[in-house]
Amino acid sequence: MRRMEFKMERPGLLETGQKVTVTEGLLPSNYYYVIDPSLAMSANIPFRNRLRCREGVVTDVAENSRGFYVTVEFDEPETEENS
Image (cartoon, rainbow, N blue to C red):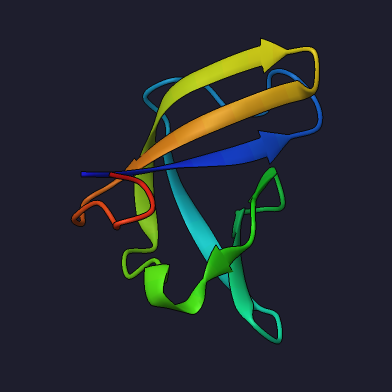
């Protein structure tokens, strides 16, 4: 299972166990992912670590001094970066 972290701006938009879909965005040298409908956004992901699966399950929602973070688990192998 591959886990990715997404930044969420407000609390209560997503809950643990919730199924989500993501949309892929393209930058000149990276990809980024957004949980639909624009609920949370990933960091920039290098081309070699592109996400293949577009559906996942929220495994954790946490708050720290920098904001709210959502962890989503996807049904695909971990990447080198995430291992």
